[in-house]
Image (cartoon, rainbow, N blue to C red):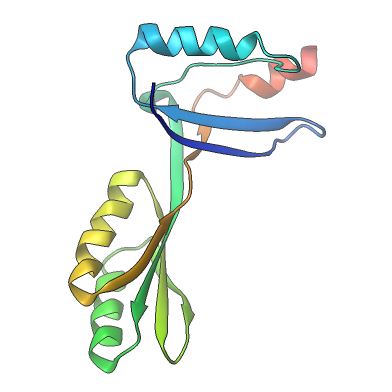
Length: 142
């Protein structure tokens, strides 16, 4: 098993944290992983979800040298990507931020790469379920 990302944060229910563990695997292996997680102490509920059952995003940061030509090119690129913005601009560098799916963040990286990306960092995936009656209702019943 290869874990692609793990993120954790407090949930909508006080005292309960939500973990998002992303793995690239088949359904049988995902179900086995899920059973192992549910056996852990203090795990309230573990669910297996596919990309079609969730809305997911990650944040990516791209650091580039701040030159006149780069700045103009960066502005042109981010104007064509509604989820991109300049997160920080200093004399020496510009940091671009994009929020999207992994493939969208990779696409922005490809567009910015010819300008000389000095640093690139991507968060783990965060998600919410598309179904309305999910984990929070289950937890509140416990």
